[in-house]
Length: 486
Image 1 (cartoon, rainbow, N blue to C red):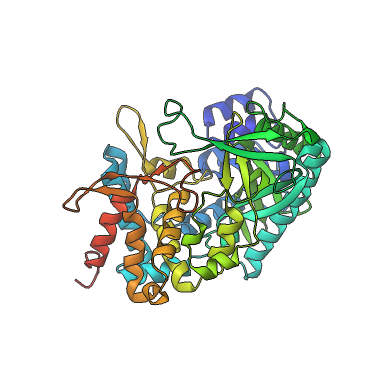
Image 2: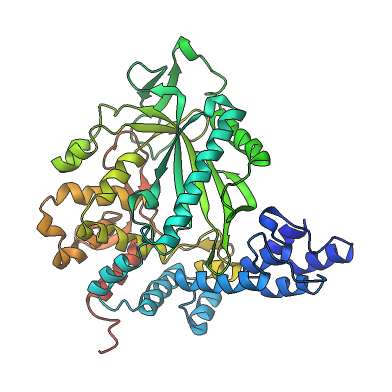
């Protein structure tokens, strides 16, 4: 209880618990005291208050004090550009209830704070802030987490053999487009005991979904039918596929010991996501760095490409690149399934030229200016929402929408000359324009529904929320509005 109160900066609760006799130096995972946890979440006063109750300065398993954690948090905030807003800008956000104005301030001030005054500088800093995993410090984090996640999945398989499987990296790290910090990693677990490939024990069938069920679906809700060879109906009913995976992971973590001394679990520890589970960790290394990685772990079943796909819309060399790479399906509740293209996406994006990667990196950078991460101190999280009778979150394009429209750009602009530096702006703004609806005069009206480029018949559309503000910013950036020399 003390550690949770400290994490949330509830000083009154911390004081009450200490006065009730709860030891201030009781250790959590990784040898972390409540003071350490308050420090890493930005609750400086709470951390200092806890330290006054300790008879001596406690150090973590990695020989770090709470003061060390405070110092490392400051470095993290600088790295993700959270400290670029002036007090005046912050006051404007806190006192206003206009989401558009908040988005405008975040985009402009963060860009200017990074030195982005032009389209060419946007390209430069998008590439410059990509995490370089060839550097020893980043490679060490990636390799250690990957190794321990593989070990954890083996442990999960011992708890529930149905989840034995191969761990595959996914997401921005495997795509080589991670920005700022190596603090988020995605993994799929391709299960050994279930297969939707030819000759496998699962049939993957699609049927047209009823409009009453979801107005956003275009066609096809996937249903799983099991062959008699492995008739585990209970696992594939209701939300059991995810629930059982969560239960097995939770049980595994109770006895699992991380091989890396730098990794420990932090509250909330483990949570269900729409398609799997999320793990929340601390990476701490004395005199090096502190990170708060989140790990997404998704159980998947290997599958063939459905017949109704648009893979052939991609340039021929990209089609050939992924011809032998299987896709998979992931469950998102109540025995509903969706295709997962993460291995295909990783293979394509990680092998693109720098000119092409710079486009998706710039899109991610601008969208990231409007997003928070789970570990941000509450003070900074409040900059990304406004109060208008209820809290409203600043809109930002989701990764899925950016990625699917980027693949559309790859399909429609095959000539490599159209991806060179002089066309960088055209490609970036085209991605965001795909997220909005325009009237007959070309005026932007509202966010549009974006359907999957490669599997338009099997994915529900997503809205391009947040794109309008980014488009307006890009047009002003192109016109030189933020140039300090003007």
